[in-house]
Length: 122
Image 1 (tube, rainbow, N blue to C red):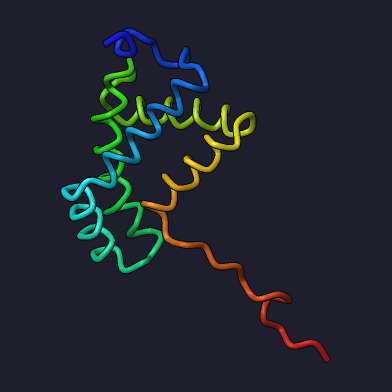
Image 2 (image 1 turned 90 degrees about the vertical axis):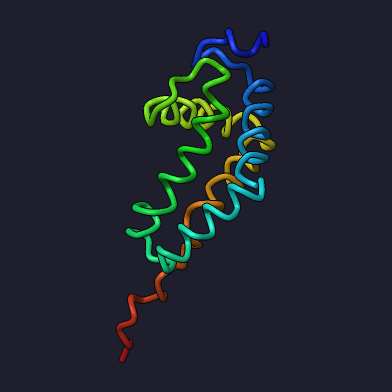
């Protein structure tokens, strides 16, 4: 595969879209869905536990995809790919949307604190 010879950091925006699509597809596979669901249940929607249980599973699945594109098969490879995606997010709305979808698969929804910090005004 020609893409396998591409070195990290040298992916074009179009290549990055392809890799992101493959990562999303891998995360959406029945096996991955089951693994992620089990991890989510263990995390109970707690951010600290999400990082402990869900993030490693999602990272492992992502590693399997991105190693075919020249990224190392470890956490550093995932971080380098994430930095590359972040660069393209600002330039390409499709990459930004795919990145948001990716993050939503392993991070709990964020809720805003109440306005005024919960202190009643007099």
